Length: 86
Length: 298
Image (cartoon, rainbow over the protein chains, first blue to last red):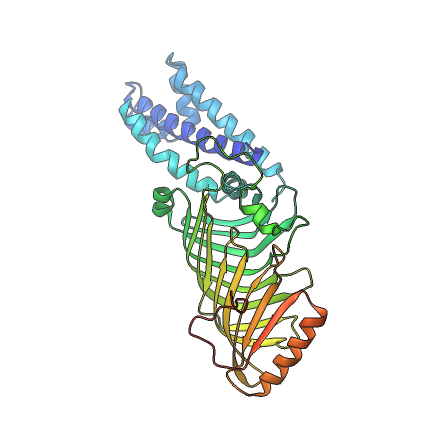
C-alpha cells in the first residue's frame, strides 16, 4: 500500500471516529444534570470542552478516543501536506 | 450502540468523499485505480496527476501504460472519464459512459522477438506458465469499455520503418476486454479531423470515418479502414500492421476510378515496393462496403 493511500485511509477513519465521538460526547453533556440547558448546549457544541467535562465525570473511553482521533488527524494532515504532489 | 453504527455508516462515506477532494485523496485514488488495473495485466498502468475526483467523473493529467520491462507503449494526456459505477461493479471491470482524451500516443511497433510491445503490456506472455485456476481476477481478465470516447490528438507509431499517423478530433466507441481469448476492439466512426501519415501518397487528409480494431491475439494486431478526402478525390484506405510471422504491414488504397489520386497511388506503390517495409496495394476501383486489405488470393 502506498503512502498516499495509507494517509487517505487514516484521514477518513480518524475523521469519522472524531466526528462520531464528538456527537457521543455532546449527547452525554446534554444529558448531564448540572447547569442550565443553555450552558450544556454551549459546552456540547465545543467537542474538546465536552470531552473535558465528560472526562471529569469519570468516563474515559470516549474522550480518549476523541483526543486520539483528533491528534491522528492533525498528524496525518501534516504528513499529507508534506507529500509532493504527483 | 446502534445509533453510533448508523451515524458511522453515514459519516464514513461522506468523509471518504470529502477527503477525495484533497490532493492526497486524488493521488491515493489514482494510485489505487492504477494498481487495481495493473494487477490485471502483465505490464503497468500508471494514472498520474489526478485533478478531480467527483464520482462518477475523474480527470487525470496522464494515463501511461508500460511493459513489464518499463517501455512506454501508450500515453494519454488530459483524460476525463465518466465512470459507470454500477456497471463496473456488476461486470468487475472499468466501464465508462464517456471518455475524452486531450492527446496521446500509441506504440504499435514490434519488439525484437516479433511480438508488438503493446501486446507485452496488456496481454499475457504466451511463454509464461498458465494460472492454475483462471478466474475473473487473474491477469488477462481486464475489461475496459467506453460507451463514448473522444480525443483531440492521437499519434500512432505503427511500424519500424517510421510509419506514423496522427488522428485529430475523433470520437467513437471502444471496448477492450482482455481475457484468455483476447478481445480488443476500438472503433471510431465519427472521425472529424485530420489524418497525417508519413506515406508519400497521403501526407494529410480529412478522415470521414474510421473502423479500427486492435486484437493482440491476431496476426495483424491493428486493422483499420477509413474513407478520406485527399488529392481532390474520395479515397478509401485500409490496412493492417505491424508485420508479423514473415508478413509485412499492408496498406490498400481504393481511388474510386481513374483520377489524380491513381497517379499518386502508382507512385506510392513503386516507392513502398523499393524503400519501405510496408506492402502497398493501389486499386483504381470503388471500395467494397467493408474494405479489407488482404493478400491477393488469401
